[in-house]
Picture (spheres, rainbow, N blue to C red):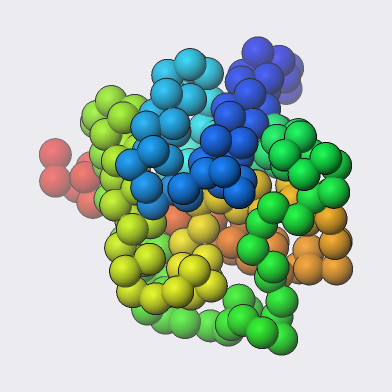
Amino acid sequence: MEMDKKGMMNEVGGAFVVSWLVLSGMGQGMGSLTGALVLAGAWMAFSGAHILPAVTWMHIMTGDIADQDNWMNNGMKLVMQVIGAALAVAMMSEGLGDLSPAYDAADTDAWEFSLWAMVGMIAAGAIISKIHASCDAWITAIAIMAVSGAYLANGDATATMALMDFGSAHNMGSMLLGDSGDMADVAMPWIIHGIMFGIGARVGAEIDSAME
């Protein structure tokens, strides 16, 4: 498989912008109108970039799962997003990391199975994938803001992160620069939650196809 160098650099650039302006200490988070506008602008400026790991998992699960190139190409996008986020974190923290919530399995329920949390992630994947496929970038960004805001309304920030974390690349980049001891807990939203979101996208696509 030949690497799409421009596409990968777009992932780095888009993730950098969103981490710097939305997910760092100076940002208002993905559940804010500012966050949605910055995300929409980044999608338009960095054409073809996924920027958010959840969106990459959405593309993985709605593509040909048996295709090795599908996994390799999108896997590289996940890595590039972490690199872009890490660069933003390094700039904001003077190389010290520490610009993400502290994940600690002893203090949170990050690894505790929750049926309703998984159902929520799958539902979010189905809804956002449909909007992403049918609408402009700014509408998808508003939908992500609404999903993030719904979770925020249901509990504190820790509970929100345990449900659906659209900023998992930022948190992974921050942990790589800071305390890698929490890596296992950061990997939960980056991988497992992303897969649940992707499964929702796949379910939504199958339902949409059956209704045609």
